[in-house]
Amino acid sequence: MPSSLLTSAELPEWGQRWLQAPYRSYLYSYPHKTAYRSLEPGLSLQELWEQEQTDYYFLYMHIPFCGARCGFCNLFTLPDRRADVHERYVDALQRQAEQWSPWFAGRPFSRFAIGGGTPTLLVAKQLNRLFDIAEGIMGLDPTQASISVETSPETVTEDRLRVLKDRQTDRVSIGVQSFVTEEAAAIYRPQNPRIAEEALEKLKSYDFPLLNIDLIYGLPGQTADSWLYSLEKALSYEPGEIFIYPLYTRENTILKPDQIHKQGNDIRMDLYHIARQTLEAAGFKQYSMRRFAREIDFTHKEILPFSCQEEGMAGLGCGARSYTRGVHYASHYGVSAATTRSIIADYVTTEAYDKADYGFVLNEVEQKRRFILKALLHREGLELASYHQRFRSDAMADHADLGQLLEIGFAVVEAGVLRLTTLGMAHSDAIGDEMISGDVRTLMEGYEMR
Ligand SMILES: C[S@@+](CC[C@H](N)C(=O)[O-])C[C@H]1O[C@@H](n2cnc3c(N)ncnc32)[C@H](O)[C@@H]1O
Ligand code: SF4
Image 1 (cartoon, rainbow, N blue to C red):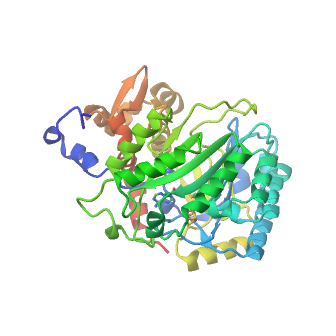
Image 2 (spheres, rainbow, N blue to C red):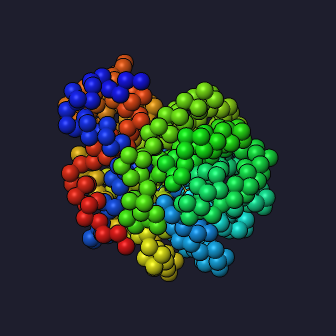
Image 3 (cartoon, rainbow, N blue to C red):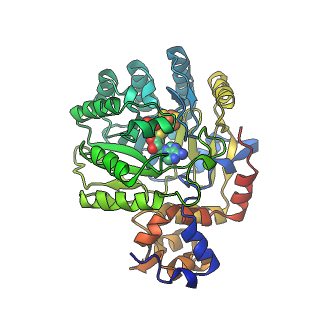
């Protein structure tokens, strides 16, 4: 496979930088949470949501608890298995929903997701309550929305799956990461592969319309053969979707960056191409650098349309982000157990959930960058006319870096759509990182991790 239209030596300095450092950061959202700051004075959520007019909305609930913290994870989550702690948390989530629901009356949700942390750490009764809150308080119609829930192997039990099935869950996503005992242990996720296999067998027997399996590549001790073993094992459960994540570590994760991926032994790009070829040969289509899915028959529900821009997203719970066109907001963010615990304690004792006091106000420059990133890093690509329609300006003229992508063979323009090539898709994380604005980068770099 050619590495670029130009040979490495012919590449300009910035092109070499993109090729040499493909794994910089995972921009699952733009702007990143570490660019959020206190909003003073806090913004009235009622006014914010009154101004937000979109056709369909996205309801998200965050459950910030896990059995233990994995060595690579910097998500907003706390290792806490206590049922009374979970119950008080769901009580708070219900109070928050009661306060928010008037703003969403008459606004249809086309998506509902429960994520974490590990939502299925909650017992079946509390899980059921989450659906009651979504339907009875927020007005979700489960027959019209796609419903997705995250789970982990040791929390997959019959009574919980029964709840998910009865409440019309369409997609269940399970984090397996690796089917090899030593690899799981190396990332402080002591997971017996047998437990993961049993969980998958149970999930299969409930026949959810879409099963997703998360796997990670670049684990300590992982080889091309052991990665292929995990991929094939995952394929043997015939999931409709597989997410493959390159391993990232940070200074604030238990596993430190200098413990792995030392120069010369980083095989993540090789493992990525092995996965891409294996999954495509198994009938999967690539939708992004991480997401591969089969074409599945989704006719069991008439789901309302939704846009990949994810605006109009109402995030309930501590650690959930909410997105309107002009403002992204959340509770404060932390990773250490002490900080996470105190942020959750504040959330649970708060009486009023009516202000956005921590977040990011997107000016037009940032809205444009977000729009581009949300489209470009996916198979669909960036429709240049839809950018023009929204911003009344030309995407290529606004962003010189898009022209650079064409120059080095990372993207092409076909029928008015700027789309990543195979090579560009493999470097999505470098492209995403490069597109971060100077202002957002300064905020991210100035963020003090707690
Ligand atoms: C919320 S978790 C999934 C559910 C559940 N908590 C679990 O771990 O089984 C989302 C997924 O992101 C991926 N992930 C999170 N942090 C990562 C990191 N630092 N490097 C690579 N993948 C990561 C993992 O594959 C994980 O399954
Ligand atoms: S990877 Fe999943 S189970 Fe592990 S700490 Fe993060 S959210 Fe929890």
